[in-house]
Image 1 (tube, rainbow, N blue to C red):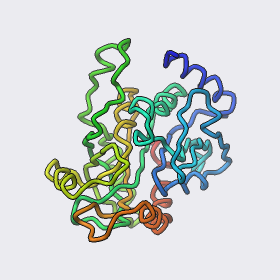
Image 2: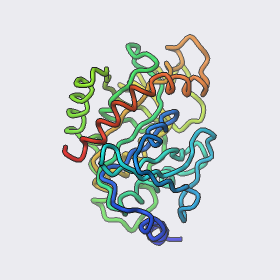
Image 3: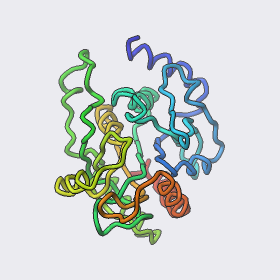
Image 4: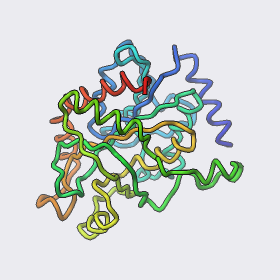
Length: 275
């Protein structure tokens, strides 16, 4: 089925359920879904009920859209994204972004759990994403030959909005929350990187590694959405950490910094429509 037809069907399903167009959407990474539970006057829509929407198969990814308010700002929180390591293409995992754009959402905050490649990072640090490296050997813009050149060959020189970067740093300083900055390196997964791959990421200039986010940011830029990104450093990458890596560590660290993350993100979501 043509993607435009699929999106039209999804929009037709969602529009009667949305009281107002969210001023900002946020994608919540592994262990960070608690923010969706903090929204006021929330309405939950299960992703599996949205026509044509790819369903998450990861146990700790709820796969729901939560419409609500953060201090009176209309917000959409996506709790449980889908990933390429589940067998989806980069184009399929970004269906949510195209759908958000069709609904009229113009601001996007992406979050994720990532492994620290920068030796100065520690588990529990929050990192403002300043740029990204796509090491997934896939791109979400592949395959649609109906689009014009300016929609395909998009400029990524400011993948993450410069004003948002500046304002997020100011908010974190105001709240006395340490916010690191760095470049995100994305591989396909689901295996964690080897020590050699981590050294390669360091040589490339990366500060943290993850298995998501990059495709979403590419499509958001294609859709002319303004993007901010924040990573939770949930572990140190292989070769830096002396411990063997496991998904339980991701959850444990995310739970430990939950309150700090919520405090920062609530304030950002409240202010971002003014930036």
